[in-house]
Image (cartoon, rainbow, N blue to C red):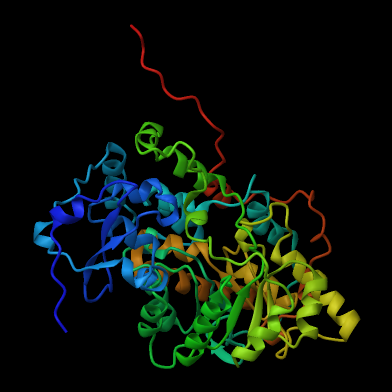
Length: 509
């Protein structure tokens, strides 16, 4: 077979318009196999593609796409062949004053030893992350009421500690879907890890291995699925979060490949038939684009206000329904868990269909605003499934997991007392690696370990089985106007939504 001729940078540069749009992106991360791609008419010739038409777009592309995205989604005939990188003109990178200031703040971060809690990681991340990354990670739906409620709801649950118990030795390890974990916490799926750090989700994989916790791999990771699995330690347990593709053959291929690679649980996201309006993300995205450039590119009608989330999620099937569970049961033997259940009726349906469990979650407050918190729904689900099916929780055959708003081990302990098997934590680990890399995630996990040890002793529980419903008072969980003491660390970190602003005008004088 005759080797393909190397394209030159000048040849690629000729194709720099909507009518003929080529860009350069490398393929595999390890091999650095660069190539030219024909993206003419690809997703309508969006502005970000046109910005890099005829140029090397690798640096812009890599943080928000896994390395196999091109081979998976772009037809073979659009792969134009390798490029002689020595002939490619470098895209001039302009470092703004804002970026210089961010880099200066990053250089004076506190030492990792000064980080005392998960709130601290968020405070540092807010100061040192690029605006686009911070907007994507921190944003939530509409007025962000649910986002804040997720955390506030834990404040409506109070402890009833037991005393005079021998708590010399305490053990907070447990099992999730039959797999051991050092604590009742798993690293839940969060997208676009490379927005925060060049190693992206690999920071989580490696830290999870060191601390014996389970990582849930996201569909929309910046790293490819195989990269994350390959980075795992021997016998390390990983789950997969799945956004269901409209093309069921693609979904089947993903699921069966995951099972072949040793994934131990499939978490099917069911709360995202359409992604919510995340206005911090949307507004930041909008302000990043100059309308004059859009006009020059002939893009006056393009909707540019959807942010990073919408840009990467058009494949998700809004038609997903209960009958599709039979499809999943037919293509895999992995335990099936619905991620994003928000009422007892749907939890009961999942149980009756023979699924392995549900995650009581509102997607971190990023979908339907005014959806209730996972901890509140947990109380409802435990009561109703006991009434309807005689179930008690925690339950090995049908596991209740929750996520959203967790910042302390005490939050997790409250969920365990109320019937949860374990709790997912997402954003705090993103903030940890965005600020300090893998060491940040390891520190965050160690903080949780230390908090579990202290708080279980203070509660009078020597293991998780001794954390029983009688140890908490959740009588106010369904009341949304109960005054509770302010959480100053959380409130300081919360960045208020901003409305639209008038553009600055130059003085006529």
